[in-house]
Structure formats: structure tokens, C-alpha cells
Amino acid sequence: MSPRLIVVAATAICASGLAFAQGPGPGKGGMMQFGPNNAAGWSMMTTDERTVHQNKMHSFKTLEECKAYMADHSKQMAERAKERKLTYAGPRENACEVMQSHGWFK
Image (cartoon, rainbow, N blue to C red; front, side):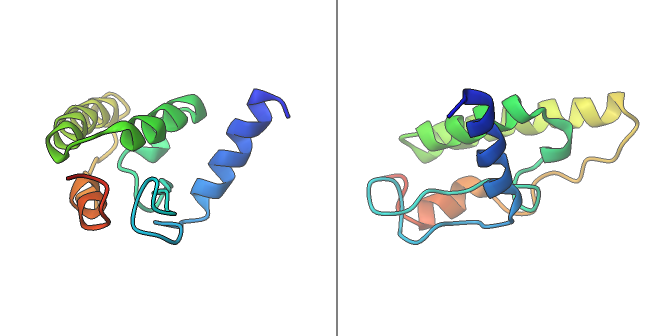
């Protein structure tokens, strides 16, 4: 399967609006899925940026790492929105806290 096809398939899965697969966290049967309904700035990211964002979110070992990344990500998305004369409302929920509640961080 080509890398491009994998990215397209991953994007389609994310776009389905699923927040979580079954299970409490990485290595425990579940992977958080990011899509237009739960990833702030989704519409302002390219397909490749969405994949990088999802992979980055899956890489965090601590809540603090996650929150620092999300603060920077939110700032970047707000800047993009301003450049495009769009309104950026920010995330609908705190993804880092949701991930923590599902056992992703210690």
C-alpha cells in the first residue's frame, strides 16, 4: 500500500468523527482518533499536517508535554485563522485532559 493511500485512509478514519477506539489508552487496546469534530484547527491543516498532529499527540508521555504542545498548536491555528479572516474558537474540549482520563499519561 502506498504511503499516500495510507494517509488518505487514516484521514478518512479520523473524519468519521470517532473520538476513541475501544480501550483506555496506548498499549491498552485504544488509540485516540483525531478528526474535524475533535481536533482544533482541522480545516486549516493539510492532510500531512493532520497526520503529523495525530502522531505528535500519540507521542506524549506526560500531561505537561501535551498541554505545552496544544498551547502552541492553538496559537498557530489562531494565527492561520486571522490570516484567512476566519474565526478560531479554539478546541471544543481539552484533548490532553481527555487523554489523561483514558490512561494515556501517568
